[in-house]
Image 1 (cartoon, helix red, strand yellow):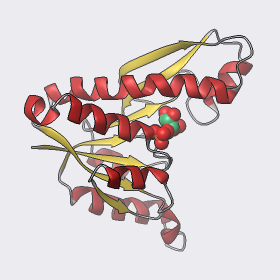
Image 2 (image 1 turned 30 degrees about the horizontal axis):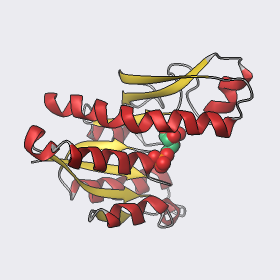
Image 3 (image 1 turned 45 degrees about the horizontal axis):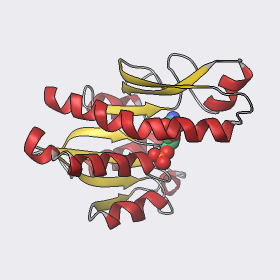
Image 4 (image 1 turned 30 degrees about the vertical axis):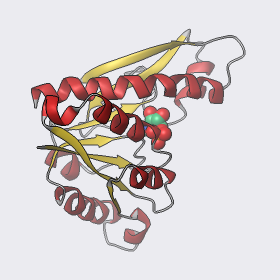
Length: 197
Ligand code: GAR
């Protein structure tokens, strides 16, 4: 079985969309793959409850617990890798996971870790993507799924979803429009990838 481990920090709506699609489309039979666990860097992430409701294993590695380490990021990533590896992942899926990962962590999962970013990369890497798209006067916005490489929000693009920017849009309204498309895009791209893994 190709195990999928999903990393979240917040609401987990992309995670839930992936889990729902994997069950509806029977990824176990079609690709020999299934979501086995959801890992968060925040115990308070609402997505953890959603994951438990789907009967999934969950784990928390609090990044704050490593603040006093000589190299907090490296210490957090080492513990995160230990927990993730415990689920023997064929694919690691970052779904609203809001931590910058160290090169060591990224290289450990090269070619088998993907991320979704709420912009049409290479435009607007980083934070506040919706407001930046509005400020730039963009006519379109969207989301990108990409392979994760050591450079933040870069890496081979696996798929994109495009939405229009409409008169009167606020960052919040635009975010909601993009998120709806993320829920269709991310499961589709992962299904494509599973056929090749
Ligand atoms: C999504 O919009 C995702 O693209 C974004 O966080 C949101 C998570 O929502 N990710 C990033 O900004 C990563 N840099 P969710 O927790 O409901 O899936």
